[in-house]
Amino acid sequence: MIKKSIYIVLIVIALAGVRLVGGHLFYDPLIEFFHIPDYQNHPLPEIHFWKFSSAMLLRYGINTLLTLALVQVIFQKRDLIKLTGTILGIVFIALFPFFLWGAWQAEPEQYRYLFYVRRILIHPVLTLILIPALLYHEKGQKKEL
Image (cartoon, rainbow, N blue to C red; front, side):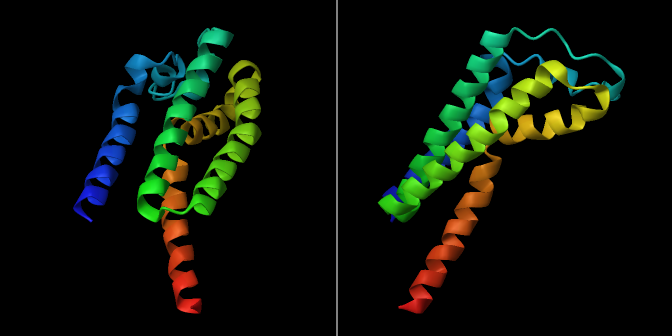
C-alpha cells in the first residue's frame, strides 16, 4: 500500500511539474496572450504552425501517459486503462483540429472558446474528471457483487 501511494504521489507531482514548467519547455505563444487582461481586444500573436502543433501534441501525450500510469497504479485493471486511453484519444481527435482552426481563424469574440479548449488539451483537466468517475464506477461495481 505504501509503494502504491508513493507511485501515486510521484505521478501527481509529475503532472504538476508538466503544468508548472510547461510554459518554459513547450512552445506556446498563447500563454502570454491569455494573460493580457483585455486579450479579446488584441489580435492573436504570430503562431508557427508545426512548432505549435508539435508542442501541443507532445504536452497532451505526456499528460496522457501520466494519466494512464495513474489509472494503472490506482485500479490495476486493463479494461479501465483501455477505457481511459480511448476517452483521451477521442477527446484529442475531437478537440485538437478545432483548437488548431481556432488558433488561426478565430475572431476576437471566439477567443474564450480557444482559451478553454487549449486548457483542456494542455492541462490534466480530464484526469481530474476521469479518476473520480472511475472510482465511482468501481464503487458501484463492488456494491453489485
